[in-house]
Amino acid sequence: MRSSNPVFSRRGFSRDNGYAGFGAGPQAGAANPYAANPYAGSPYAQPGNPYAANPYAQGGPDLAQGYPQAPVQTAGRMTIDDVVSRTAITLGLVILAAGAAWALELPVGLGFGAGIVAMVLGLIQSFKAKPTPALILAYAVFEGLFLGVLSQAYNDIARGAPMQAVIGTTAVFAGVLIAYRTRIIRVDRRFTRFVVGASIGFILLMMVNMMFAAFGGGDGLGFRTGGLGILFGVIGVVLGACFLALDFKQIEDGVQYGAPREESWLAAFGLTLSLVWIYTELLRLISILNND
Image (cartoon, rainbow, N blue to C red; front, side, top):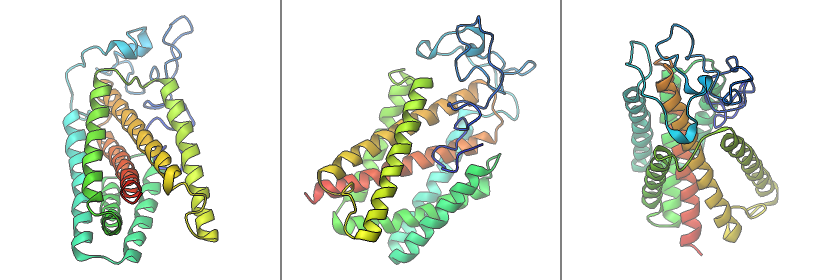
C-alpha cells in the first residue's frame, strides 16, 4: 500500500519493497552478491526489454562505481529531456502563480485555502497508480498561490527573505546534483531508510508543535522560533536535500531501465515537492535569523 504522504509516496516509497526504486520485482538469486539491492527487481528490466541490462540484478558494479552506458532510447520510454521539460512546466506554473498572488496581494485566508487545496491534490496524486498531468499541474497552480501569499507575509517580517530563500534553494539543488553525480552522495538502502525515518519523525514533531500552538497559543513547543527554530530549520533543509537525492536516483533508474514516458510527470512532481519543501524551510530559517 502506498503512503498517504506525498513526500513518501513517490515511486519506490511503497510498503511493497520499502526502498527507492521502481517497484517490487523478484529478487536475484541468493548466490548473487547484489541480491539484496532494492533496485534489483525493476519491472522495467525484464526479458525482451532493451533496458533489461540491470547491473544490480546481474552482479554488476555497485552504486559507487557508476553505471553502464544506457542503451539507445526507444519510443515510449522516459528520457532526461522529458523530465527537464515537464519539471520546467510544473515549476513554471508554481512561479507564475506565486508571482500573481504576490502582485494581486491575495488575502492570507485565500492563500492558505489554496495551500489546503494543493495538499489535497498532492494526496490524490499520491494514491493514484499512475501520474495524472492535469492533477499535477493543478497542484502546481494552487501551491504557487499559497507560496506567493506566504512569501509576501514573510517579506513583511524579514525584508528580502523570499529572494534569499530562492537563491538558497537554487544553491541546494545545484550542490546536491553535483554531489550525486560525483557519487559523494550514494543513494542506497541505508540512505533511504535514514531519510524516511528522519522525515517521519520531523513531520510528527512539527504536527505536535502545531497542535500545541493551536490550543496553547504562541509557538507551541518552540520548534519554529529562537535557537530550536534555527536547529529545526537546518534539519528541514537537510531533509529536503536528501529528498532531492532520492528524486535524482528515481530519475536515473527510470532512464536506465526504460520507465514509461509518463513517469517523467511523476519525477517532475517529486522534484517540485522537494524544492517547495526546501524553499519553505529556508524562508522560515532566514526569517528567524533576520529577527534575532
